[in-house]
Image 1 (cartoon, each protein chain N blue to C red):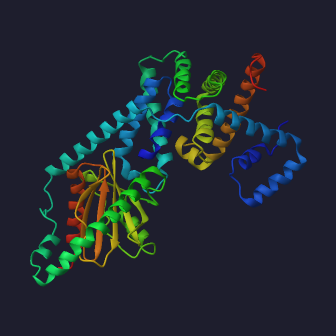
Image 2 (image 1 turned 90 degrees about the vertical axis):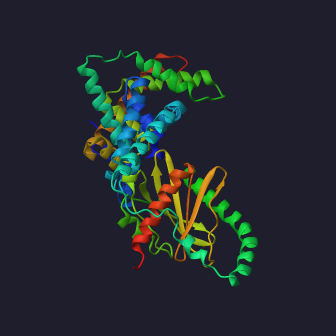
Image 3 (image 1 turned 60 degrees about the vertical axis):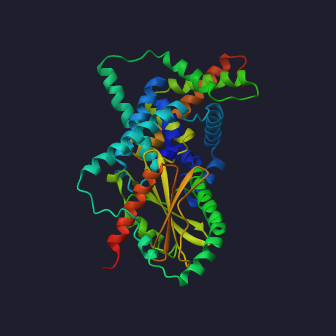
Length: 169
Length: 262
């Protein structure tokens, strides 16, 4: 379980609307995983932990909605800046950060259901079976959502890049 | 409008198809412009994300907070189990009694051992600590993931020449995570991996010919507890405190004692 804390954190950051929410979700998920470790039984540890992260996130969001405290979307922007700042890069930091921020914004703008499969596939490098396990979706649905997510992200990125003279390509 | 093979091309791109299907799709690609473009688009999106999204790790303060919470959790578990009627405990490892009656004739041999053993031990402890730290740094911590002793124990058969004590002590705060095989003193050692709070404990076991195992020691900040059952040497190594490490050692020794012929 401990080897997958980074993956759990990254996933939570993409699911939750704010950094604070993500922190709480990961901590809750880790403790829950620790308590129910016996359920793992030879299953893939990473998929298992991310499944718990996802469930914790859904529970937390439901509670938030019930309290009618849905955070403002501007949280996403803050989140983007923070995540980028944690990764130092000596060469052309400014341009890179611009691109990273844009990409983050584009991905955050995807519907939740598309974003989560895209994150699991491209950032956590999971195969369809693992993604299906984490999201409790049939593999066919994973595939179609993944296709939609990729097409949507590419289209939005092209639109942005055209709109910006400094954009790449 | 869209080619019916789009999803299959995506499967191909994601490495989800076998060689036969891959050849099939490659044939299709050679004749379908739309799917060739799709393949490029998929690659473009992948490059975009993999280069554009930093693979952030968990920030240290949060990690620390979670580790604290895990430690708290495992302490709670231990306290609860202490209140239950405890199994008969041996206050001292039972093999100490074996050596208490050693006759004078053994003294010469013992002296030789005292001279030789420290040199051997240094390399042995170095080796075990290196194995332990390497196992934590790489993904090679566990080869067989299971909390079930009846899965882990048979797994060792055929991979090592030893069949060590394996049991899950989750209710006492020591979770069995699984096992792997490592080299110790030119033997294939069976390694069982436990988690206690935030800490991992590796328990090495291998067959030895010599009479004695090294004394408990601390090396590079890691505690190593040695014991022996029959001709099987055990070494539990971890960055936990001594009491926590000894707790697991005691549980394993009690388990061995129950398994001994009456």
